[in-house]
Length: 306
Image (cartoon, rainbow, N blue to C red; front, side, top):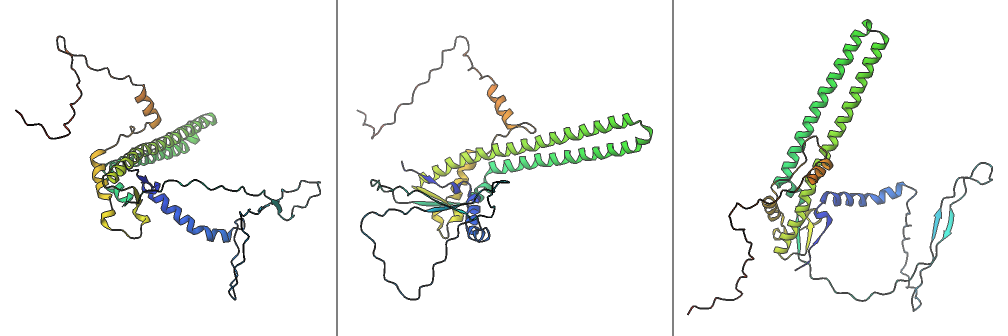
């Protein structure tokens, strides 16, 4: 069986794209920040120079130095806070011995796929997106209703302020503040439960997607699968997006999400606490069912009958 190498970007392609953008921005950030080490630009050679002869034998790396910022001096110790950075000499780097020659990897049989297209066409991902959107809309509606109730209570308290005593006003204000605090905590919990449900659904999709990519790649003899965004040019025969989507919808048409308003941790704990259902007992007088192993298929042609 061939070993399939799945790059992590084949599962989270957007993360790799973001990493590439960050790497491209590093030189500009290094020029703006004085804390980065900026290698000096090589001087333009005016004339070709002869190569400097190097001594034979193993080369020993020269110890490098590192600059340390001196700590700010305390009051009365006589140190100057504007001292130059300290030069600390590092010990020589150890020599790396040569390694034994290992086996060469097999020839690469490459495939590409588009994760955004798979997530857009997968029915399980569409289900997660629909349910999470519905729960967020319901949360927003409940929050708006509760805020309107707060405003009505505040307005009613302001209208009754002239006819109430100071103790009654403080009591009503405290009750209103407690209601606002409890409602805000409940909305934060519901929002967290929605995020947990989305993570549970996407985790199920990602787990199955990795297995299906491996399955489709093995069926086509591929041992390296890349994200389509990383490839500048490829032909359609390399792309396995459509077969992965087809197999994904057959294997995982939907996912299981925690109920609305319930934490995913609590839902998993409640499911684990449920006792296992015992197997159904056979009817009285019925012979017990026997499970027999399937007979092996014949390896060669059947012998002719006599």
